[in-house]
Every structure is written in structure tokens, then in C-alpha cells.
Image 1 (spheres, rainbow, N blue to C red):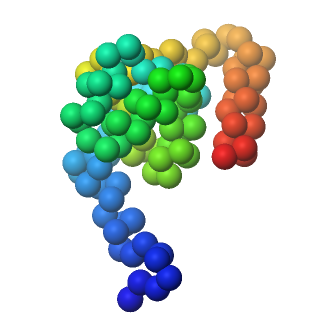
Image 2 (image 1 turned 45 degrees about the vertical axis):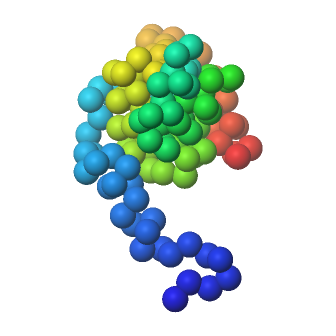
Length: 122
């Protein structure tokens, strides 16, 4: 029985599976610190693609977000966010800015620190 307006915890167990239509592997690899930005036509296109796509498109329209930030804001596991975002990139709704090459480790550490600070501020 659900009390005090709390959500039924059984719904949370089914939701990620339903959101990705049962898929667990993204169509492309996306680093956790990869930066995502909604394309100009992305917000309009996402309106017809489902609630999660619309949320992600609106989240990344004004300010670029990392994959980790998207997962945290949607409160979904990272793997679920990765599948959704990969599909949105394929459809041209999001654009992906890959992280720096491994050769520039100091800059990569700086980016990861900024992502961590952003996640802590949520």
C-alpha cells in the first residue's frame, strides 16, 4: 500500500526497462563526461518521441550537460541515460562533444572535477 503520496517502488523497478524498450546496450559508446547539447530543431522533434527524450532535450538546450548530469537529473541509471542519449544523437536531436584525448590527462581531470562538482550541487 502506498502511503503519504509516496510512489510505488515496484514502478521504479520496471521503468528503466520500459524507457529503453528493453535495450541495455547503446548504439554508440558515450563517455560519462561527454558533453551534450540540443540541436536547434531538437526540442521540437523530441516532443513526439516520448517524455524522457523531451526532458533530455529541454535539459541540454540552454546549457551543455554531461552524460552524468543527464542521468542524475532524470534520476535514471547511467546505462539507461546512455541508451536514450545515443538514440537522440542518432536522430539528430542532440549533438555530442567527445571528451579530450587521453594524452591531455590534466585537462581531463579538470573536466571530471567539474562534473563531480556539478553532481554534488544537484
